[in-house]
Structure formats: structure tokens, C-alpha cells
Amino acid sequence: MEFRDLKKQYQVLKKEIDAGVLDVMASGAFILGKPVKELEEKLAAYTGRKHCVAVANGTDALQLSLMAYDIGPGDAVFTSDFTYFASAGSASILGATPVLVDIDLATFNMSAADLERRIRAVLEEGKLKPKFIVPVDLFGLPADFTHILPIAEKYGLRILEDGAQGFGGAINGKRACSFGDISTTSFFPAKPLGCYGDGGAIFTDDDEIDARLRSLRAQGKSPEDKYDNREIGMNSRLDTLQAAVLLPKLKAFEDYEVDAVNKVADAYTAALKDKVVTPHIPDGFLSSWAQYTILLEDRQQRDRVQKAMKEKGIPTMVYYPRGLHQQAAYKWMGLKDEDYPNTVRATNCVLSLPMHPYLEEADQNYIIEKLLEVL
Ligand SMILES: *Cc1c(COP(=O)(O)O)cnc(C)c1O
Image (cartoon, rainbow, N blue to C red; front, top):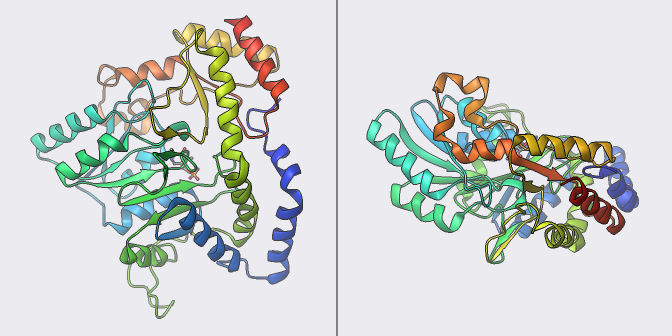
């Protein structure tokens, strides 16, 4: 059994994917070929944004977004403490300072109350200028935008939605990657919509930001003359081959994959909810289930369950074993576990179960049966 079965998905979509990839090979247009443009248009339409800019990966997508708003030294960028490193690293690499926010244990997403507390603390200290909030749609569930958007407005901050795991989710029908000023996603193979290597995208409704991003992903070239560079940019484009892989995958994602993972999640929750803490999906929210993550009692029980499941041939994962405040790269900030009680609890107790749109009912039942047995 696989944790996320990409081979099974390929078997189902092989004909379309192979044809698209071979077309690109024959066309010779490997950089920003036609499929990239087609994909950008389809992704913009899917999310409900005006523009989509396809880039090399989800980390670059975050960095380029912050560059497009001139974020740098002296700026504070608020993001979740419980996320993949890039949510904060993308600010650090530009010389800005990430300010880590504790999570809500019910959703694993940024706590709006803790966010406001930390914005006030930065303002009171007066050393950094609060500029951006980077809410993360962790595990496929959109962040708490209902409460975070008003906070951004109140303090005059912009929002960059890190939708690397959230693509396909929604709040009251409004899709992930459409919240705030600018949004990003990742097409890393194991994300809800993955390609066959690295890939990412940026979403915006702002024409000027869109134009600047297109320049920044190509070394800051001017639109009129590509050998006249108007600023320092990156080399970060989505390969045409990856766009060709993504086009049929996006169709399957839209047609049935998001429904399929929601069915798996419903089956897990129905069978497990009385035995462990199962994921909480707030009213009106839709998750695209990048992960199905349960909360066990403590680290000892979590590690024991993971080991026992492995012995029964069931792969599980711990996302994430450490908060960002515990990372060696951020030791200099001197942050304490006491200040991040929910992140610390999550790192000790989370366990993610196999989850993908092609997980058969027999496997679901086996996972449920064995987990209940192990518990
Ligand atoms: C995967 C991920 C990223 C980075 O995406 P890459 O394509 O791997 O660079 C950023 N943020 C979050 C929350 C992620 O899960």
C-alpha cells in the first residue's frame, strides 16, 4: 500500500499524459510553450483569479510574490509556526523577518487570535514594519480567512495565501488560491495537484503585479526587450513538459479527484471519530485533503501507533515533527516552546493516514480496521 499512490493515478491518466508529453517533445518548445499558457488560463479560471503565473516551484512562488511587493529587510511577515519551511524561508531569504504565529489545534491552521496578538507586539516593539500575513492552507483546508482578512484590513497588512497544500479547497464555494492580495500553490508530486517534478503557480487579480511577476520569473527582463533587465529577478518558469502533465491532471482533479478524497475522508471520520481526534472541517469549508491527519493522545501513543501500523504494511507520516520555531535556522530568534503550545502539541500527536483519490474501499477498510485494533 502507498501513502499517496501516484503510480495508480498515472495508470488511469496515462493515455492523455503520454500524448501531451510527446507533443511537447516533438514541438521543441520546452520553455514557456503553448501548454504553459493554456494551463495558466485554466488555473486562473478554476480559482476565480484574473491572472495565473506558472513558476518553477511553490517556494519560488512565495518568494516572487513577496518580491513583487518589495518585501525586504525591516519588514515583518507573519506566518504559521506549523507548516513547511518555505512559508517562512521565502521571507527570510529576502532579508525580511518571519514572525511565527501559533495554530488553532482544531484545524492546524494559523490562529487568528494569536496573529492579532503578535501584530500588536511587533507594533509595540517598533523595530519591524508589519507588511504581510502568509496564512497557510494546511493539509488541504483553507486558512481561517473569515477572521484573518478583517485583521489584515484593520492593521493595513497584505495577505499572501500559501495554498501549496490547499489547491482545490474552498470557503462557501470561493476557491483556495483566491484569498487575499496574492496566492501561491505548488505542483510538487505529492500535493493535491502535482506534476512529475517541481512546479508552482502564483495567482493575482492585479494587472501590474501580474506583469511584474512575469518579468521577475525571467531575471527581471523588461517586457519590450528581453536583454534589457529592469530589476533583479529569478530564473523560475514552469517547464512546458510539466504543464503538459498538469493539463489532464487538472481535468481529473476537477471532474472527480476532489470528490474522491472527500469520500475517503468521510469514511475515515465516520469510523474513527469516537476513538481519536479526527480533522475538523468548519461549516462552509471544503478541504482538498492534502493530508488526513488525526491527533493522538501524546508522543508515546503516536509513535507506538505509527510503528504498529507499519508492521501491518500501512504507511503513515508525521507532518510535522517540528515547529518552525524549533528549526536550527531560526534558533537565533530565541523563540520558546511555551509561546507555541498548540504547535508543540501538534508535533507530538499528529499522524497522517494514507490519502489519495485512488485509495480503494478495501484498503480504506483495512486501514480503519487495523488502526482501531492498534488503538
Ligand atoms: C510544499 C510546500 C511549499 C513549497 O512548495 P515546493 O513546490 O516544494 O517548493 C510551500 N508551502 C507549503 C505549505 C508546502 O506544503
